[in-house]
Amino acid sequence: MIQAQILDLLERLRRELDLAMILISHDLSVLADTCEQVTIMYAGKTMESGKTMDVFTEPKHPYTQGLVGAFPDIRGPRSMPESIPGAVPSLISPPAGCVFHPRCKFAFDRCTRAEPALTELTAGRRAACFLYPEVTEVPGRPIPIAGA
Image (cartoon, rainbow, N blue to C red; front, side, top):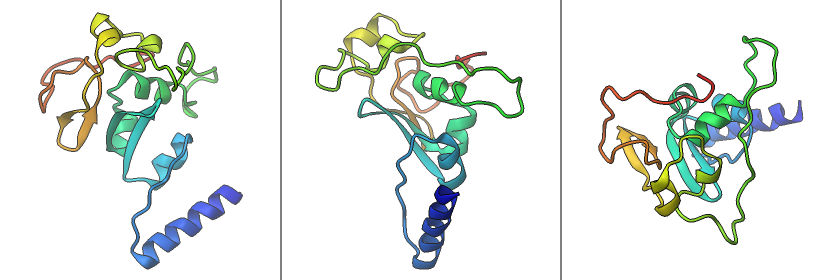
């Protein structure tokens, strides 16, 4: 109840004063309801960014796929959502390469050696993952979706 009142107040102030707003949250439902754009971060690194509904309905980065997959589907069967295995890395001594590779079910050798650049997949849509070529489009390439 209090959260909804605060979010309503922030939205009212944003509209009345014509403000931009940055909202930082771990609650995907709050982000989906209040944000036009979203940036998904893991261990201080940007993993994916784009229009909120695009990112949540077609997550590209394996971490985003895991987040979306771990969120309960109120229309689906009543079961525990899949969690992301492993533990968050130490930020003092992060792993070499992609910081998500120790928990990523799609990780391969390159992920352990190099940090992927945040690459534009399509206009306004970016991901930092070696699963995608360093081009602006990914024509005909199947996207692995967690839990599919």
